[in-house]
Length: 246
Image (cartoon, rainbow, N blue to C red; front, side, top):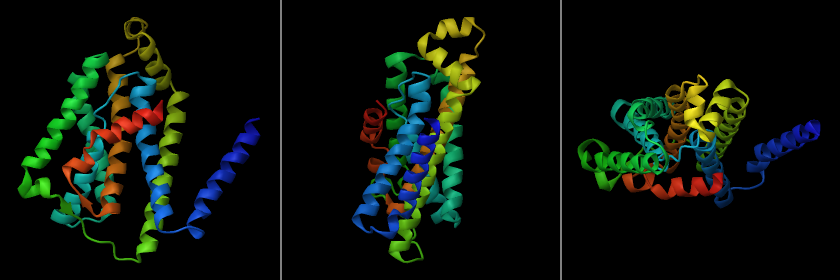
């Protein structure tokens, strides 16, 4: 049975890798968007699925990744991929700093707190117009390649990130961290009484989730070449991710 699943997985992977040879334009964009939402959903699953903490404001890390990539490209002159990686790291650091106080909350209190963080971060991006472009948004440098090649590149990057995020989910599920997170989800008090360091486990899970979400936001910014707070901090992205996760 496992061998059949591996064969099916390899065939599906080969199919997605070869797909850009047969389709272009609109359908490349649609499937790339599916990959993007798949990454966000798989990243959300690490904190919401395994740990049971409904991070409705998780999209804040998407916005941080997008704006970090844009700022490093425009203000510093870095390559886009450097901005994407730095954006993911900054998103993870943001999650660690926020997680120390916020992850002490539980249930709907935590969910509401994450919504507030997302809204506050979006407001900072709006008010800091001289640096972020504010409500007018900000335009990134256009790629120096043929448009079809560019879309194909983004397609493969999103597909690769999706595979990496899903693989990370799988590895976590088989690790001590994964067992600890599931214990926290089922009964946090009992998990702590059993010797599990619940605060540390939750912070690590949220940081990993934020890292992948931040990477995705950075790739999105370069893909669309224009971002604004209302787009990259849109709470509906998180809502869609929750629906897809369930």
